[in-house]
Length: 185
Image (cartoon, rainbow, N blue to C red):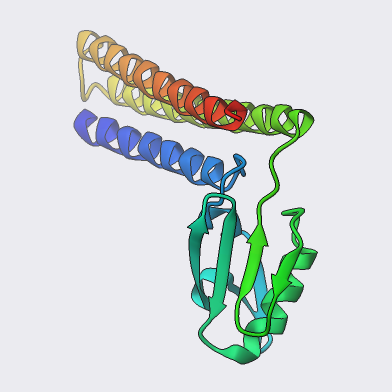
């Protein structure tokens, strides 16, 4: 029974780490990255659709993204969605392909992005701590129900704390790497 609690806790903590990685991948670090467009949706025949489902996105140069729609009629809608997005990049449309030139980041914008990365890291840590609390509560319930002994309960809580420390260290490393990536000129 305690093993299922520990397994569930570890799965949930891994999901928190993956969510952090996904969120940080959409932060722009001065280089072109197709993940930047993950949050941009296009009104395609009345349905909000991610650009990645409508077009081929490639990175021909370090500071350029190209978007080539499979359906040429979607070109104008993709262009409009990019202009209305919070990317802060003006698309260049030649009627066949859309090009996004990624401007170099200003020092001020880099600092804002570092703060955003740090905020994402803190949210992931809070999520991990909440998962730890839930797991500890489950172990304490098992102890109260006399399913496990007090010693076993204490041992499992120590295991939970060690796992929490490991995942929080991983969050710190991910955020630190992203900050280094953002500040790199």
